[in-house]
Length: 347
Ligand code: PHE
Image (cartoon, rainbow, N blue to C red; front, side, top):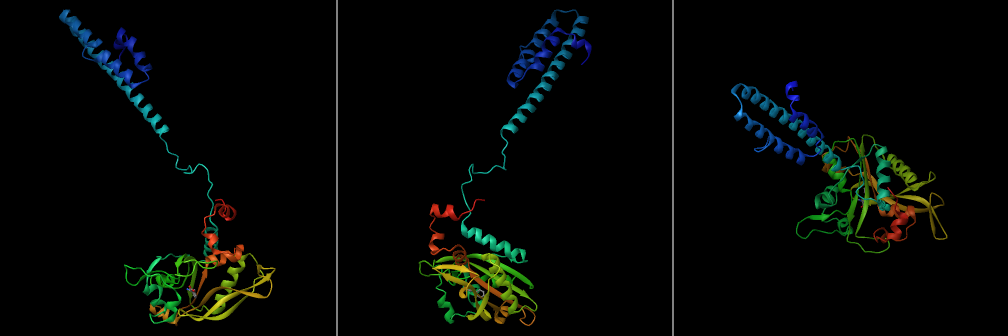
């Protein structure tokens, strides 16, 4: 902007007004007032007609320059105001995604959730990988591949829920399906655990529900033996029940997918109707386990001479009831708020 234009009275009058203008609407009104069809510049231009040619020439150039100058000032201010408006909008419309969607955290973690995450972190510290499988599975994964052929009486023991419209599909009756799903996908050596819902068409009473949770563990490494299994499970029980004194024993048992098979008992006392783990010389049965059956390994394309392994399966609800002294499994599913507040932990 040269001095000559800055000296024009219109410019000295309007330059500060434009700079001070704080909203786009009034700036537009100023623009129309100055540069519009009937604006001040047009009025100025009309005066040219009565001038002598020389004067008209210099005055014309001056008015044109004045118009350009005003128009530039308006544009600069317009940009400025638009920038400010955008900044304001961005500030106002900011969404703080770190805020909790719930203003007050009144929820709690259910006891089963706490137990399952404790089990998971215990085993992950030992290098076990967490795997998941489908709750709707097929007879092959739930039975056949686990060495439970269709004529096998063990199938009847499972009280299976079959799917009406999907032949040979069922709600898995145990998490041992995880053994097959893992072994057919992953090469040993491996250590996995799987925790999830299982379903059995059982009674509904103080110790049974048609849906419950199981923990499945599987270790497949060269030179694994039954001593490792016993040590692994006894250590886990010591951790879970919070007692370093726990004694354990194996009782021979039968599962088609393990050989030999066993039930693990831990010592307890039952004085005055109170169950205490890790003291006394009574025994409490807590889970089923065994060395993975060679047929299961072969079914998954693994050479049983190269890899041995152990597997175990435990009921999460049963473990929870023993640890917290719950007499009735149904309390876990009653959704009684007083119970939930008592056993739930804040997170
Ligand atoms: N799947 C068995 C059950 O549901 C438990 C089990 C798992 C036993 C793994 C041995 C090995 O009863």
